[in-house]
Length: 92
Ligand SMILES: [Zn+2]
Image (cartoon, rainbow, N blue to C red):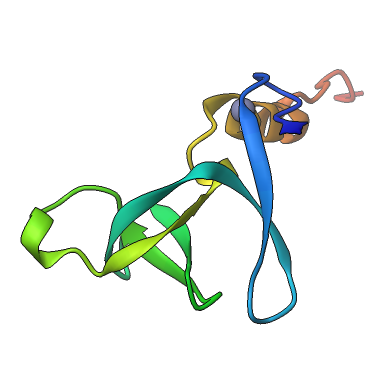
């Protein structure tokens, strides 16, 4: 079993049709394909699409796995900290 190293949540690796292994939530969910959607979803065909994770039940595009780092708040925060923590004492 794989767990998120930031928050300990259960995660799983999904292989996309491109051959990339993508860290995802282990639960399969409905998605609504949307180019401006906040989440990335690996579909059952192995394609990676931008999507929303809620909408009209009758209009869902299909089911797939959500890329984990589009939903993990800890992962996102850690990545930002690495770049924003800087030392500004070089003015002389
Ligand atoms: Zn996490």
